[in-house]
Image (cartoon, rainbow, N blue to C red):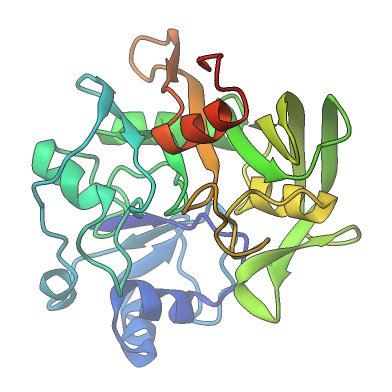
Length: 305
């Protein structure tokens, strides 16, 4: 049996979603549902069922799909911040996606991790042990679950918003307020399904705390605390306010002279350890491309965060 936790806010039929996720036909999905080999939240559903965020899909073994969708371990460099029998915390570099997809099955952080260690099988084949994600160009701290107990503990913490995250972003423009809390609703952009859009009357609440860390001519280094965990929340929020993240092609402008990727870094992650129940915090330093921008505008001072 394999388990997939639906983490998106996008409304999509289960047969369409599993067609993409399992790389099989919708007719095959419908047949599996009819044969009681697929359930959602322990209940039988129709192929037209609209998935909701945090739905748990269980897929009971069937011949063929496992071999077609197997994710292979790959030897690759991983920067381990912390590891024990329950969790592994990684400093993810920019330029690598968190986990495989039906179209990209190699060269991901997950491929490298399952070469190094065993992860929870929940979410297999593409999201083994994955409890949250970072965008491809976003660098920084990310945690994975090594067993099912830890998986559900971390998922519950994310759901209850008890996990605290801090990011650093370099944005275009001089951000006007030293500290600001921004709240609005977001929903999928109908014109571009890979993007999100700001709304005020419909969608999911997005709550973000923003604090100015340093001004650098017409750039600003911001410390950001996403209180909710919406897809592209930080990027969309800053773009909507008129201060897009440097190098954000999706919500801002193309790459700049300062950096050749999205200037967004996951700096710290604070959570309750699933087994010890102790509060633990993991921090990673700013990457070199961030430091180069900071020293460019303040050559005599060595920036340390």
